[in-house]
Image 1 (cartoon, rainbow, N blue to C red):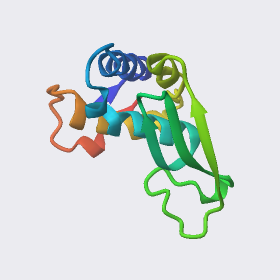
Image 2 (image 1 turned 90 degrees about the vertical axis):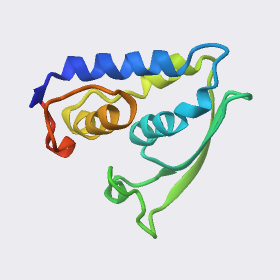
Image 3 (image 1 turned 45 degrees about the vertical axis):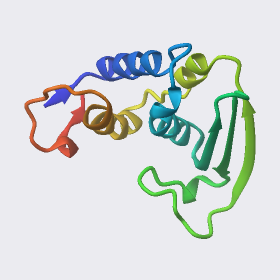
Image 4 (image 1 turned 30 degrees about the vertical axis):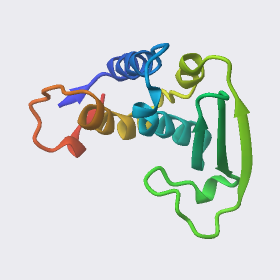
Length: 130
């Protein structure tokens, strides 16, 4: 099943809107938020302080150590980063990488963990972005 890039971006931004509703418990979407930040910043060990509006993470310093799947290279040089955001929704939307490689990583995770959508596909890993 081929999925259009614009549909994935639209779905991701919709899920960000849903996950950032004012007054709701956003921590139930923390895994999703960390996934967006991880891919955008090439980060590991991400911690989000929702009350203080801060993101703490270790960013992989050299691209050759970055792997979308694991980010667990034992000798990868990292830098500690402390980001402050004003609006979580806006911040997370800037984290959406709109290239095909990033979207091919996001989409199966998005539909399998966050949207209860019928795809007609048995194997979610086979989904590809057109």
